Length: 440
Image (cartoon, rainbow, N blue to C red; front, side, top):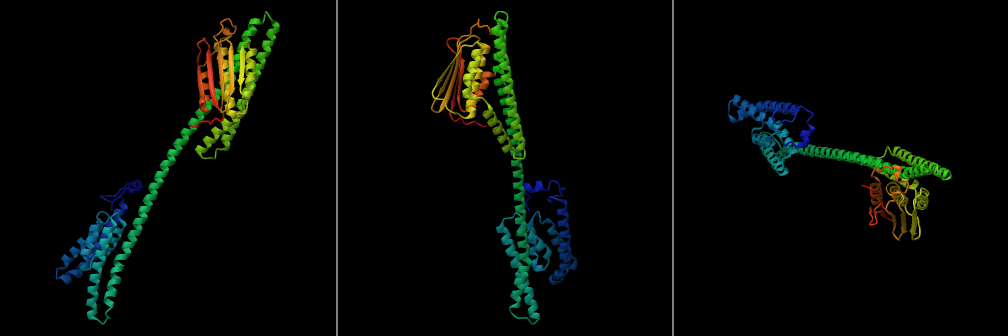
């Protein structure tokens, strides 16, 4: 009987037997059956030698040789069945015939071969039984139907049970192998899903770190930039105009308090997102990661600034000495929270860049409410070297434009930035009215 790869893997934990046996216990079973069959055939060989007028030792040796063939039942089941059929006229090898038919039916031999050999064994047993019973009938007083009836009963009794049992065991074995293979494949799929869940979790953590860094940059950079500008102006006018210095100092304090307030709000959102992640700790990995990311994004969007705050934002830059003009086109309406927050952050970061890199330049802020989108543009002229704030020494991390582009493209919008012909700089963004956040 052939051995499949699944069977070999299943028996890997058991000591492998000699020759063609997969396990030592199987080899011991076959050797024991062969010894029992050899003893049976040797005893039956005595009667065969008497009938064939042969020396008794020769009949015993013949029986031993025939019975020992059963040891090959797993390797060559067809040969064992053929030998048992060939020795049926000699009335020996009943155990070999039963075990051989069972092994043949339970093996992977094609069913047509099994059916053919089972039919041959049935026919041989029927013929031998019919002849032997007829001889006994002639010597005794039996009715005529007794001969064929006994022949049918004996032939079916010695052939049908082992074949049916072998078919059942073979089907059950194949079913178990199929279930084992399916279990292995499911285990591999679960392993792949676990790896993907881990990748998704790593991606979610990376995205969360990026979002936190972006929020920190937007909140801190703009407020601190205005504070530095006011501090520089305060230093310049402290001795000349004490009244203006007091006003600038008050503005610096207001900016600091606003920065602290926004930082507290952002930390509150992060803590809220963390508690929601704990609440979903018992959920499946992929669902927990997706729900946590969505919850954190939604909480951040709902608690963030909106388009209505842009006028206040522009006013703060005016208080810092920047010449800013705000132009609004179209009728204002409500947008999704993530759209309003992104529009606010783009204008905020663009104004922060003007404070850093173009102190004293005039700025034009345009906001357009269109049918299915909202557009914004921040354009500044050439920087004024005598603006007074150029010496503030504001650092730049180089992440402002990158962060704006990431925010806009994540909502399916368009972002364009670059220098103008007049020596200034322009930042433009268009956001869809009903943006769909892209999840990787």
